[in-house]
Length: 171
Image 1 (tube, rainbow, N blue to C red):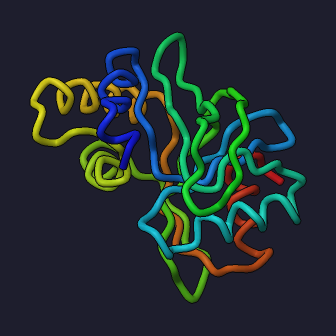
Image 2 (tube, rainbow, N blue to C red; image 1 turned 90 degrees about the vertical axis):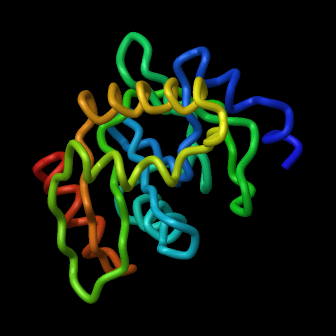
């Protein structure tokens, strides 16, 4: 709450950044993979599965700063929510994965309006401030046009890593 009241999300947006509620993992290829969803969906679970089965490193279990300047990058941020994991690492984003729980692994690429409607609620911004909303909307438009975004209904097991890894890296 103190960060929110400080105006930090406004300052970040003014400098091309938006905080996304997501688990941020660094893949073995040196790319950021962001798992975003409402609390309790399985972001931390998927991040841990990637650490365990794909050799990824969890950079932040709950938040990532996305910057849309000179490419789109995920950046570590100094607060972590409940995960307690927060490191200062910047990497190009390989993909943003919008999680949902499922009984099977179902993966599809999303774009445009669907991507925007699912990402915006996971962003930290000031919705009553018209200028802040404009900035965040513009940043999201840049992100959506530059980064692959997937809807991933998944199970909390190794097969989810295998399915996503195959789509992202052909492995």
